[in-house]
Length: 361
Image (cartoon, rainbow, N blue to C red; front, side, top):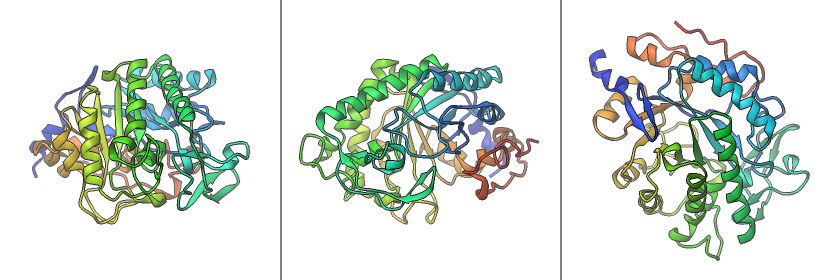
């Protein structure tokens, strides 16, 4: 593919209330550099370096103490969190960028170490598979407390409150994290949700929690400032569903009623990547049934991203690891320059190494 045919990556795109200058988006990437859950100057530098992205989607950010479960991750439930993130958003905007906050409740993949010794929460008393990243190292996941109907309403309010704080902190919008085995995903997929009330069983019941969260978030701010991320075949932490095509087709249809800024899927185009089984992709079914702006992510390079947009498989592509290692990724893709390789060993360490020291051209 010639450089000329990559031009589609550099055409503007209206995403909700924003006009993006390009279609190369920065995917949400947990990096674990926050200081006691508060964004710091190192994070400000990291995001500002990447302001040339069409849109930055922040790392997953806990909406409440109950939703927290990754050591070094940031949060958005206190004035200190708002102030820390405000420094980040001000700097990104000063550099000409745009940034959404990803709203995160980890559900059952938190750990008692983060919850004052109490179990984390989930839709059903089914432990996740694997280990939590706790302050004392990796610990096996435990059986969660199954949320009551009243408690579910309280969690929905946590999403709304975090949305209000994101607006106060100067973000351009929010992305609801409905992917990667976290709480919303746990309600959606039947491996984690085995409830027998109105939040479990049928597809319609299992998407009820997602609908309530989207309703609360869009009411708190607006639909054109709200995105949603889904991962229909991500199989980490014991996640699966018996009929993902039927589930996510119905999710897409339901979301058409909200006029969101975008829907965003995380699903690899290549088998063998982390958490992606070698099964048929569900993203094309979501694209076919969702009528709004659509973003996807998972193993793309410049050529495959441009082809996906040209073939109407997506309106924009989010890049993860390439943005970790290349703060000037749009410029490198436009000019055909070599990309810095990412250092996987420093993805979740502390300090600047492997975080803000990747060179720009």
